[in-house]
Length: 543
Image 1 (cartoon, rainbow, N blue to C red):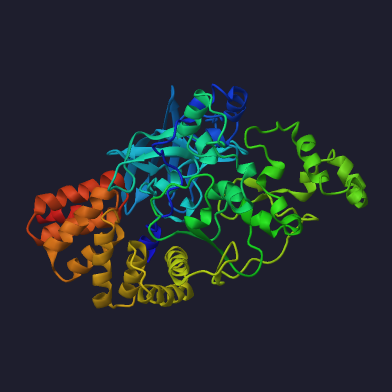
Image 2 (cartoon, one colour):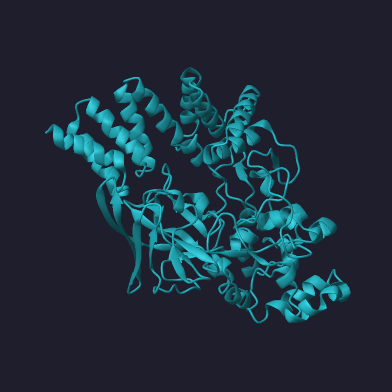
């Protein structure tokens, strides 16, 4: 399940629609707002390496990963950034270097980097942490015993850090240059396509209603959807059938594009993008309902400086709370300089990243542990409280089962997806995940037609090609396996296991030289991949 779970497509929130004009077009009429917005983290959440609002330091640019004992170094040569790694894997000394072309993340707390190989984008295995001013592995990378150089930069990765991703069709992670039209969150991500609005204003047509979205004037669900597109991660997000590639437009309901699931029971800890989930847990939100939203406290177009922060946010709190409410903590309040957030929105560590802290939007009355985290196999429920259909719930359970290895989730996913298919669900993602669940149960007879139908419905998917190729290889149907493996590698050439499986299939058909080239290509992307090394060694001994 792990591969298929990783391939679950989430709604493509970024994108450049034909009616989009670009943020610079807004500056002629909204110059002051445009200039202040450029200085916010949202506006500078991606771009060419070396740019943005943060300047990395390089005096702590070397570290060793304890589990693999690989040494990582980050270099800056003029305006060019690169990482180098060196270590021993399987008795072989591995050395490689990659130039980092783009940063992803504002750097307010941290940022990651992307490098390209053969035109495909991958995440660098190094990240910069702004608070401690140090370089280290990105979140999740410490679990690997060898360097992880093949993590794809998917459209979903760019959804909340860039605008106008230029993905090349029929690939997972090959982009035009540059890979996105605007670094950061563009004006139109929150205000909708601007071309018609600009034409309307240029023509002096001030009647007939605005042609642009002001989130503050939207009904609560549509208003909150603008922020939720990036600040509500939940435990899992599942794209609605047929909307996997749709672009969310401000003014719409996010629930029409995707379903957000959370684990029931308990109070989950903080994560990097759990702001709205934590706010929903707060007594403030429960008492205020739709009156309290992100814009109640935040101006998305500007950010107060550190010295201004307490005075900026305190009036927001006093709009609902009496000044006398904190008399019992008078000494502490004065010590904090009347900074409400210092006590009631403390900066805390998060579960899914090291070296960083984020503001706790659950607004605890008193600092300290709150509640109890739900068990890892807790039932999944929709964040908005609405009933979840079997298709969406089944996909959420399937994805989490693959990622977190939870048998109970795999069983729930199987039953729900069978119910969904029996009820008429025939989209590629549903069929693909149900096929994988059948295969994991040893029922290839039921899995194969589902994989084949998923491929017909969505020629851009990869999971069915990989899984069917493996089934045909096990059956000795080498030509079919080779065709399917090549199809998957066209869409993402860094699938090291698939490329090595291709090499083995080529050997079975007598294509020894093609097999050698395939194994060598696997090592271009993943120099420490032991099966490719072993295959090349076998080929050398067989000469």
